[in-house]
Length: 187
Image 1 (tube, rainbow, N blue to C red):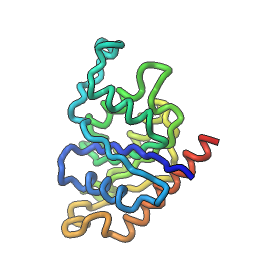
Image 2 (image 1 turned 120 degrees about the horizontal axis):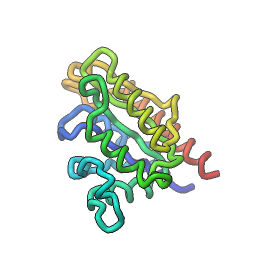
Image 3 (image 1 turned 90 degrees about the vertical axis):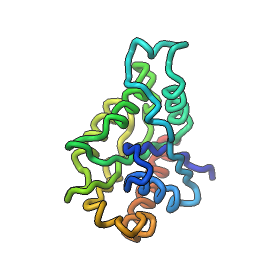
């Protein structure tokens, strides 16, 4: 049985963020047949501009992102909530992946959105916006693979998400769901 390659995109650029830790938890709890690859370099990708999205002038960082998505069987988006929505860096990544028109690197890829936020709803608005944007970009959003962890600053003050049994179990289940959706898509 081959492994499912899951590309993880983290919407927080801060190294110690709880969402980055949630990505680390995904790497740690991934089932044996799932490999989670956390993409680094979202901060290096310029804002999407169709004038530079022309063969021969596409920024190297955007090409790296598109290549990582092309190699992935599934995508896991891990997002905090900034002012009621997803961070600009994450929306920008989705914009780059959605192009060129008709050839989205996300096309048909099983995708899940998870995350954590300080508020009482755990970033639900940001996650809903990300799901909407990903769907429009061509991804196959797996609606029953959701996780929005509230009160992140308190919950993870002294506990890494991988050591939180409830969160680790939920993340592992989401990765299993993505792997199953990827297998069904390939069949």
